[in-house]
Image (cartoon, rainbow, N blue to C red; front, top):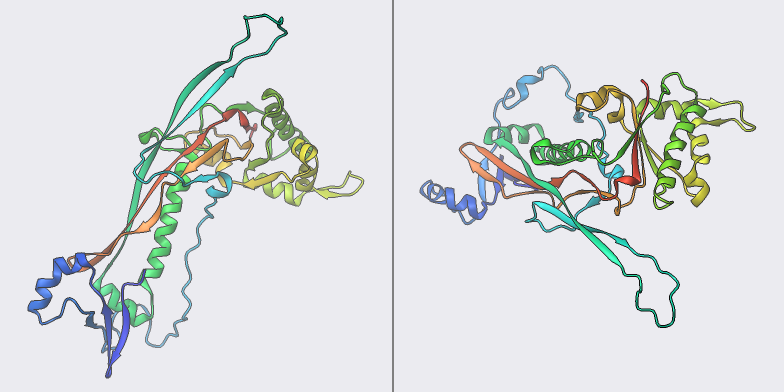
Length: 356
């Protein structure tokens, strides 16, 4: 969203901005009294006349300033790679509802004139998942804008990128852990997903032992659901992912990495020929789990990733509203609406907690 353009008039540098209807309604009368035409683009003299103007005081007059600016790096945001995102929800909705049903019936042998035919019984249940309205805003002053022009910075672009990340951080946090105030559950704390505790310590266990523990959970999900759900994805702590990708199994006929051994020795590969997806998640480390009131142990999530089984909600994707002048500042609000993680079929997943 570009709010202004630079123009040169003679030897002077001007900022050209076109007033929105809301800005014209608020400021039009004052601008007309000052001799401006509020219906035309507004020109503001933005030329700096002295060397230390704007943010120049931050840089020594004898220093060379590199043109490239470097963003402070933050952790990757990847919730939409772990959880399918559902967007086909009306923007006005604050709650997502769906109906599940359980049918009971079985045929039998009957006589040619029999009237006692087996009947079909249906039991329906309504499920609800809450969603929340969120937002943030871009904010800068007229003085910030003049300084940014002097330094060749684009305030709109930098703040817009930061605000989009702010939305994604919020969505990832809610998708993984939910929100107790809104009665929203997350990917890692659903009360209906079964839990299993292992006596194996990830730090000291060998690769084959760890793979056996993972396979035991995959097999249990598949067998206990009468082969209805076959896990195709596992999320593991970052330390375990690094261990799987760097440790070599030399006692095999053909030496291979631990992660290749896992991908070729599991029920999903045997049944479908497909590749088991293995996702590293720093949130699954014991210390991170503890921060959010969960178990203090390293955990693995084994599940069948499918939009039918689980999803997170995004009825309103992040979008900006028209800029709003407030005194000497310009505010550009952003809005969005999100939900946590709804496990429609929690029996398609399991949390596996290790001893360390």
